[in-house]
Amino acid sequence: MEQNSKIYVAGHRGMVGSAIVRELERQGYTNIVTRTHKELDLTRQEAVEKFFAEEKPEYVFLAAAKVGGIVANQSALADFMYENMILEMNVIHAAWKNGCKKLEFLGSSCIYPRMAPQPMQESCLLTGELEKTNEAYALAKISGLKYCEFLNRQYGTDYISVMPTNLYGPNDNYHPEHSHVLPALIRRFHEAKEAGLTEVTCWGDGSPLREFLYVDDLANLCVFLMNNYSGNETVNAGTGKELTIKALTELVAKVVGYKGTIKWDTIRPNGTPRKLLDVSKATALGWTYKTELEDGIRLAYEDFRFNAHRTER
Image 1 (cartoon, rainbow, N blue to C red):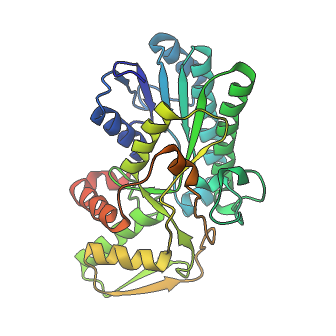
Image 2: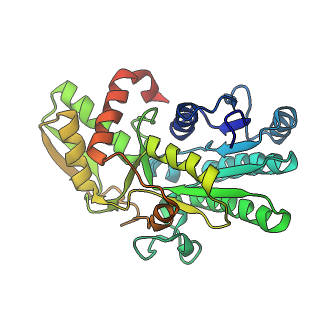
């Protein structure tokens, strides 16, 4: 990408999209195009095609998505599949029709089989059954990834995809029911501390292993890949490090300053037992993460405290 290339960031108000915009600006890119959902509903094909025909972006970061934690995914399976599939197909197809030089599709590590060999390599895609709690979202993301691959193979486009592990950081969603595990814990421990509660109950038994990547590190990788990678296979984005949910809760409690007891509701689902990404591909390309987990949680907690208006999204 040139410094003045026209770059469209779809989903610029979300955690990932806003981080990509920050990173592009940090690196001196000056021609960034954005649209709010109100200005452009990506699930409306005619509106998306009109936008691309008028704007003709040269590069596209497709970070827009309907996202949520276990509860949100389980309670709205059809919505997660439909909205994600239709918006990504609209954007990718319109980009291709209007001669976009390069598109980068943002997926999720949930695309990999539930019991995939650990750490999960990019090549394990579609080799086993998906985790049922987010199957609808995973199927939509797999479809977007594959559509990029098929356009490359049929029409010679240069469309790539990146599959992030669990993300966190500024502009996250801290909704009490629809957020992911790390922001949910930040909110829960903060509110418990403020209310003087002596104990906090967390979901599951704390045994699942998870990997977490600070969203600004992902954004740095996204821009790096746009400039340095071409290929049909996706690229994993993570740290290569994991910890149990129990260890994570204790770390979040420490950062927030909560001193009470942590209990576990074992009736609640754990989700996938383990999903560590093999990040050797990104490493071989010359990229590595920068933000350690405790440092990142401190930054995320600071964002939560100073941007409380975002917590009800």
